[in-house]
Image (cartoon, rainbow over all chains, first blue to last red; front, side):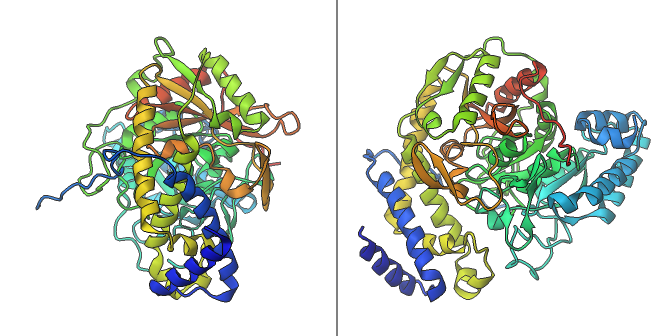
Length: 64
Length: 470
């Protein structure tokens, strides 16, 4: 993701979920989103098999 | 022994003295409250004292002792990170956002269990807001200062929990650990800390941070006191959805079993590359003490750490989304922009991170076929000066606050039990500062990490002296 892509994503996704980001915070949010992006790249580059299921296991809740 | 001397000793000795009638729980509570009053202006470990409750609880303990009961933590003064519910108080979780919310209607489960074991709650402890930090430089309530050097951080996010024990204000504290928040402050304040296996202890009645990764656990000045408290807190709680269906497995019976038969290795790769000289020296000290010679390397540690980061950022932000929308100015300046950014992460990143986490857990499980315990530094360095922004690690200029968790995150990411043990004198220029080493075992083997910590302590390799506060 380019720096411009990150800025566009931050603005668009914040608008989509109704999260106002004031001008005093925007540069910081873009910076932290950039850090998350670089770490997410490490995660997304990891090849996984179909049976590498997500870690949390849902436990059905029985009636009391 | 007078109460003031007992307070500086072990929780086990306090309980023995209270059970034996040499001192009352009331005297111990008064002594702890007086010590906190005399010292906390310099440390800022506490955000609230529960003096009235402490005296009432202590009187109840004394009545039980008088009636012939013997309690494992009789009269032991303790305190909890202020994300644990305390009946009648609003749970702040280090924030001002929570101020004005209704008070807790019941104690957290672990507080209930310590109370049943005879321990006496004396207050609530400072932390990073909503546990999102490794330094306890809380802008609302002030930084918690390291009792061994008041110019330096205590670590976080359970900074008050580690500092209160290091300062001798109480014998025992509780904290939480999502990415290192028990192990980092234990390391920097020179105390023992236990992060149990994910799903071991009930989290009900504690303010969550990241449900996928949150753990609760104790801090103390000895491995024996950790075991005592941990055993008292075990037990099923059907209302914590993350708690595993396992029976209590007490650790006290094998605490003094020694090192015989244990296969011990040192973690290499990431855990050496991201550590400064003092952290590597501390690992060497502990490895020698445990007779560990083999090196073990886990695969893809950087990706596992990245997975923990992504999951934390997304889940933590989602939890606070409504407040981020309506009152973001009230959030901690050191973390509010990270929270805002975390609310915007694409869902495939988070789902993939949870899959990487499972993959990593399977690889690491295989590594425990050949070893019972693994050793790694708990922090890359000794405690930085309050306000430090950058650290030089592995030839990179890295943000100091986030980097304090570089070596703990990959381990909590897969929920392994860890006891952090304090080592001294390994930084030539800062010999007064401690640094912690993680003793890591396979899931559900808290007994092994506590047993090894106890053996190291008995051999004089690790220790947790009370700070001189000079």
